[in-house]
Length: 467
Image (cartoon, rainbow, N blue to C red; front, side, top):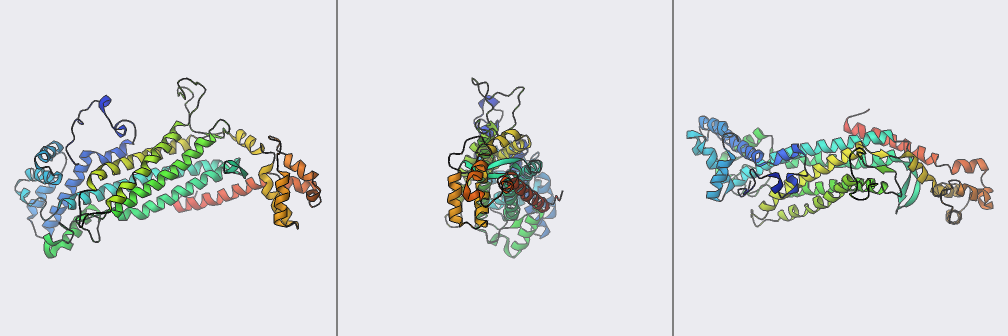
């Protein structure tokens, strides 16, 4: 919660400053990071501690019940916590006093034996658990959208490109299933990481549990068990920040994958290519205020723009891993900014990208036109390999094909075939029919389709969706 917000409550929308407040971030993700939600998690931790203390006979059971009953945001008001924080200049002290006020005689036992970061970092563990759950949902939705489109276009022929140049024929389905596999890897990483994030501590000032005496292990186990968290193995005064750094760097990885997919859509939507396009509402949407013909890939560009910020936000958590001795406060201020911004931005990116994929505009005719535009050069590899198989040294085969593909007429899909038939070195080794089959792009397209089918099946199996 930090310093008490000024000029925020009741602020008219036109006076808001941060775009996250009015432009970016799904509502269900925003709900995780509201001040009221964070207050609620702090109170849950205080209640769990009191209940654990009562179970270990440290405090009266009646006190624990009174604390648990009061530990709700509708009882312990955010306004009162803010008021006390202005006096104390300390957020957790303000929280514990406000909770004590509402707990009657049990108030004397609020926060007993704990240090501030027992509450803050345990509540952070709850927050991170919610975060990983919602991010897993967005990743899964994107993967499923990619799989549906890959399935629909497993045989849709197009040209693959390397260095921005025509390479060989393949299919749109294979391009898309490759992106799906990448995001599946991110989902696996998230699931592996989630237990490392769902941790807390209830071990006192520098993590030894001395304030709880011999009951320390039991109190921590009971408190965190109630919250569904695991204990930090060897905390200092805080939960170790490598955990947060792992999450934010994972988010940077996902952002780069999202950027890669968005950039592919942007490139293929260029007028010169025109193979793909993001959804565009022809009835009302405007691409340019002056060039009325424009159909700009603004959503994909938005994903690429936000990716740059998400990658930048990975830096501060790496620096936060470095603490003075058992802790300092140099991590605190930027963490309050980095985590909600990072999660909201990445969620926005994944949600937009899913909409792009679901509504992807595919121009099959333009794909075929572009595939055939290189004069048949996209099948040069097949000819090179076949020549080598017929007894020509590979280096010599390469030079023969290189010469054949020089300055092929643009747009004549049979130009390489005509040249190959006219070359004594080639025509002496193949019949006309063999060359026709050899330089037909459909052979490569069928291979791409078969591999797409295999990869789709494997991904669906991994996701538990065999069909």
